[in-house]
Image (cartoon, rainbow, N blue to C red; front, top):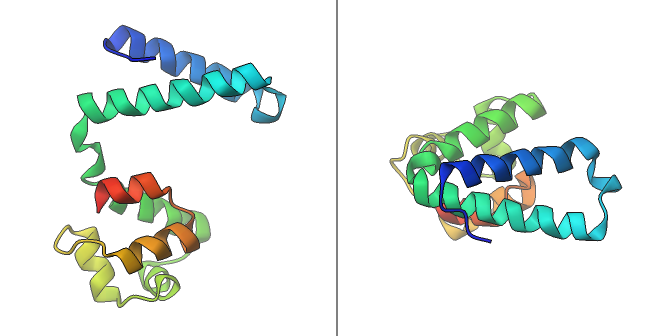
Length: 120
């Protein structure tokens, strides 16, 4: 399923929201498959239409992670086993994520591997 217009995009988002409201454990197998297809289509459309969404994505994602886990940036750098200065440079776009850090983001923070590759 390919989304090519804003109307199709918003329709797909509405369908996704409906499935989420129903609750994942109450979805039938066909509904689960449809949700997966819709999610992929929406993501592809967003990447095409709004490519800059990942520029601040990692910084925002880390900020949300810190809020959820009630930790500060220093504690986050300890959990990722990287210097605080390295974390700051990555968050400010001055340094790129290497493979070691990408693995830690995925394993320790449960970040989506595809997202990490997009922002790396």
